[in-house]
Length: 383
Image (cartoon, rainbow, N blue to C red; front, side):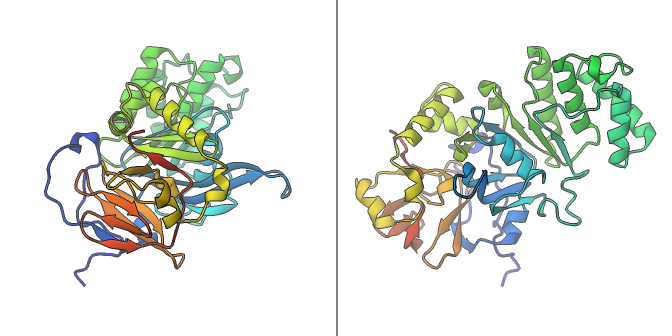
């Protein structure tokens, strides 16, 4: 062995949009077993997540076979309409709720396990609902949460001065119950930022915020992720502001329709706005007939519907099928016939995979025989 851990990339590749179209020499495509080691290298890794509420006879499915990968040192914008499952997904990531099926890795561990620090001081979480004590002043609120996270009083005071100014909060002695709804949300945001966590999870932090302050918040998020030590997951109703994120996850009806950089999404679907991209993907999802029954189809059946020679197709990472001109480095899971997994690492513009009959053929001449795959979301790339 050359000492390379199973699942390890040969070299680190910047996955940002600046690399698209740049000819860079890279090692060949490498197939490796999907490993816990590989998943723990991400800030957040969600695999085959299912979450439902209600009775077993009439369950309300909130998350359905959802896969999500958040690289360390990035901003991940999670977009979707109200009720699509964003808040439930975030609460599972932070350890407030548990999945019915699937697994989640956060900062190298599983939320809620001993020593993971999640929930805890490694994560700053701003929920959608206001979860503050109305009888506390702003300063008392910051002291309370700062002490919970093990901060010294002097540290809290220094941090409080910065946050009051940064988030344009009123006087530190104002009671939370006497603040407007927007001001209370900004206090909630300040609580998440107080202890300078490794991972920030922000559920609608910019709702009702002045446009200038909103841009200031985004500038701050970009700044704190620059050195690669901090990661941000943010949901927002303002779709276009999410262009400033490194990666966008488009979510609908408990499923992730796409997970790419904003630049790649706009280019891939020939759209002028992310809202257009989301609309196009939503329409394609709506055209599928009873997708729940399509979970494991023989790939030869799928090929009959997409039988034009060398016709590239696009399948979201969620479905676990390779079949796209890859625009950026990423891990893609393929289900093989023995119920195992195979990871294929593809680099920008260096390879593509075409699905034919029972084989996924890669440009590097590596061939993977597949018996069953998930074709739940099978889309034309250029439709």
